[in-house]
Length: 335
Image: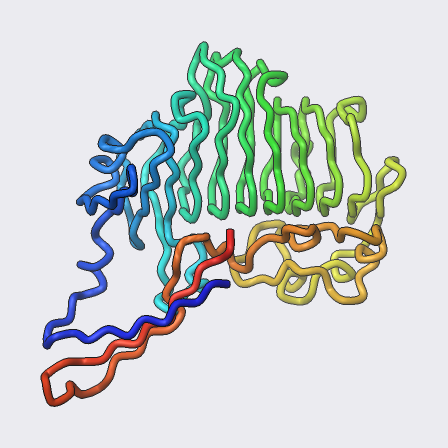
């Protein structure tokens, strides 16, 4: 991690945390613009610009459309990831990421509404979502053109395509998936699939390429012929696929923070590292399965690549000049 220690002198006036975090920063053309809302920043932004969202809640309304290929960063979804327990939460029922947002990205937010991907009649070759806490991701209805997006290090419920599933391509890397996938082409490496899927299949009408994942589902796939590749995965249930580990008890994969009162849902406080003596560690000599197993493992607690306040100290008394010393330790991930 990069570490920056900032010593600042404040002249008799303290700016409240709420005031300091009520602005949105737009980085465009080598300049930084401080704006009062996400909407105004997006309106002003151009393709490949960066928008930094503050900590706290941002209300998007019933439906909000992202129609530019910009890069949006919140402060993260896990309150344990920084000293001030800060997160960025987007509020609303639906976030539409239209095909005009191609090449853009979102990182470091929580959004419990639905995300709709794509526009009717338009292709989208790539959109990236990373280190977010999300509900369902849906293919826009009647979108018969190719849609591709990459999910990295997120917590996601379900990913659901329309009937045109062969056009919906999803690459999954180091995510925790708690729901089901339907009508999608899936390339998945180093993920954890929590859903028990007792009422439906985990994968339903999907074409799949799966390696180094951990699966807890009892009903795995609606049709074995859907698999293009399935190897080096760990299953808690039985499976007919060769070159995978099967029937591995949960307590031989994760520690008690996961296994105690386990209910097949994501636990913000759980540790999803493999236990040291897990049979899963013997699956491959190069990579372990799960979100921390590859040469680019998931970042702890979903910390974004944007700076985070890890320590903040304020002197109790002003000095002779009436100034108060502030010492802040700020860290950011390398990527």
